[in-house]
Amino acid sequence: MSVGLRWNDGVRKTHGWCREFLYRNVERTRGRGVTDQLSSQDIIEIFRAAPDGILVVDASGRVIASNPAARRLFGYEGKDLAGCDVESLVPGRFRAEHAAQRELYAAEPRARPMGIGLELLGLRADGSEIPVEISLSPLVSPEGLRVICTVRDVTEQKRYREFGRAALRAAEEERKRLALELHDDMAQRLAALLLRVRLASETQIRERREALLAELREALVDTAAALHRIARGLRPPALAEAGLEAAIRSDVRSRLADTDLDVELDLDPVGELLDEDQKLVLYRVLQEAISNVVRHADASRLVIRLRQNGERILAEADDDGRGFVVEEVDVLAGRLGILGMRERAASVGARVEIQSELGEGTRVTVDLPLRTKVEEESAEREEKTADA
Image 1 (tube, rainbow, N blue to C red):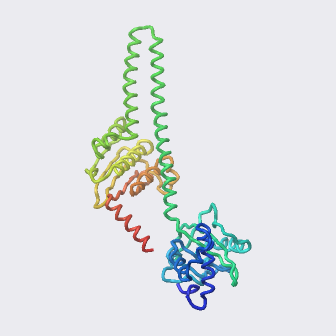
Image 2: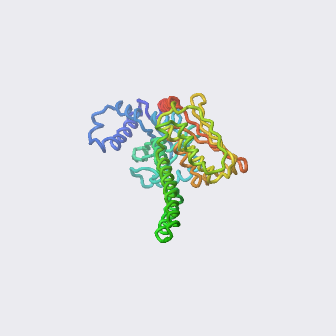
Image 3: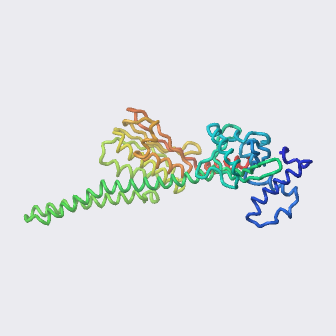
C-alpha cells in the first residue's frame, strides 16, 4: 500500500492518525504511554500486520488508507483501496441506507460497534458477500473527521452458530419423534392393558378370566417388544455388535414386518471403512427415510442401497410412492424430518439430496466422503483461507 502510508513528506499526517489509532485500540487495554515507546515505523508495521481489516475513511465516505488484511478480506489484494468510495464495499441493496447512516454518524461520531443486532455484509471484489463485524472509532484531524473502521470476517463464527442452532433443532426433532412414538404406540398399548386387567378382575367366570389373562400375557409380551424396539432406536446395539449392514437389515425387518411393502436391500460391506459417528449418521438418516416411506409415501416398493463410489459412500432409499414437489421441501421439512436428516449428515461432512416427482416416487441419497477425503477437503479450505 502506498497512498496515505508513504514515509515521505506525509509522515506527520500518517503518523498522527496511526498514533491515534494505537491510543484508541491498544492503550485502552494496556495502559497509557505505549506509543511513546514505539517508533513511527513500528506504528506503521503494526497497522500493516493487524489481523483484522482496517479502513480509514474520511467524512465524505472516501477510503484514504487500508491495511493488507482489509484488502484480503474484500478481495482487493494487490490493489489499493485508497480513493474508493466505502459504499462500494457494501452490497448494492444496502448502499443508500449505509450512506444515510454514515451521515448520521458524522454528525455525532463516537467509538462503537456498527449495526448492533444486525447481520452486516461486506461486498468482495468478485461480487460475493461475506458476513462481517465492524467497529467504528472517530478521529478528528486537521483535515477533518476520519473514521477508523475495524472489519472482521465472521464467516466461521456464523457457520458455527448456525450449526449449533441446527444441532438444537435436530435434538428437538429427535425428542418429538420419540414423544410421538411413545404417545401413539406405548400409551395406547398401556391403556389397552389396563382395560384388560380391569375386565379380568371383574370377570367371575373362570374360563373367561383365564382367557383374558392369556390375552393379557400376549399383549404384555408385544408391549415389551415394542418398548425394546423404541429403546433400540435410541442407540441401536446391532450397530456396534453386528455392524452397519446388519443393523440396517434388522431395522428394516422390525419396522416393515407388518406392512405390505416389498423391500429390496442392496448393501455392500462398507461399514469397516467408517467410524462410529459416520455409521450412526447413515443408519439414522436411512431410518428416517424409511419412516417417511411408511408414513407418507403410500409406496408398494422400497429399495435400500449402500455402496462405495471411490472415496465416497452412497446410501439411498428409493421408493415408488406418491412423491412430492422438491421445491416445497423446506415447507415439508418439519413434517418429514428432512431438516434433521440434513443436519445429521452435515455433522460428518455428508450431504443429503432428495429427488422426487408427484406420482413417481422419491429417492433420498446420502453422499458421505470417507474420513481421509473429508480431512483433505478441510485442509484445502484452510489452505485457501490462509492464502486469502
